Length: 454
Image (cartoon, rainbow, N blue to C red):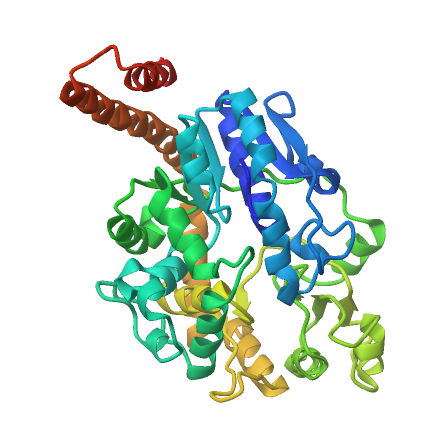
């Protein structure tokens, strides 16, 4: 496995590695050297999952020691990608030594060509949602030939399934800019992914047919690739004790009454939006816990809070510069990239969350927008809230149903054998056309595939 150097990609790959190791498979996991210590606790099968440290080459413009997107602001992410591209010779050396049957990857568009050269199979295990990939990067858009503009993204590509995805102009323009930007080594984000999807041997998504089936089938048809459904890939609960002061704080509130707000480790709000957010939570009159990074221009959370805020919410409102894990109803505040389309799908197609309204022109929200969304979800007499809570409960029950994940994972692994057999059939046809077993290249390929099946 060789995921994009972002914690939000590395972690799902580790969860998948755990599910495969649970079935007896051995995984060699390439990671930036200093990042290994941050994720070792997630490795539940250290005898089968081996972390292999990769030295990240320095790229001009990067801070010395920067390894992942967590270490740099968003505009420098392409430099992390350039550094990752420069690891190709090291990865090739490891693959020659390890001789794995399959290589899971996502952003390294050179991986399929490398694995093909070595007689291996590549699986693009995509962490970005299938709805986002299909909407933005469908070959039907012919991005590499025509380019991509905001106007293009106001409509879905030809043949795209019926959905709730409707973009505002500022969202479409922002997504078009990100999709066509240089994303390392002079390769645009679009070209990088189109090459990956076009050249890999199979495509895998962490999802179920019941949830994203139409989008996955669309992608499989567009790229003419086998589609693998990994299922929910629910990670095992972490066995850790909550800090005493956190436990004491949370025990003061009844179940399902506390609002928890977190945007992940890499999202940094502008100060005015940060203030509108916490003021909106104050307006709800409900207890809340906010875990965010300090906004732009602020060193500490406390210095960015509105005047008098802490005194007014004392005892019911808590704002920290950290993150937690919780299970709650969903108020959606998309900021960048696939978050926007994910929010439309969750609030529209699945009806399991409420998206905060934003300005049509500037994309900004106010404290009243925050208050309105939270109240719509939390108020007992809200019809929308009742519908959302019921749908949330239905999908949660489905995803945690006994046997569902095992069934998907078993099918996922079985598809690997079908891919190899399909390749073997093609090689045998090639052999028949050549009509010469004495061709060493053909003979070697067939024997290698037979070994994988065995």
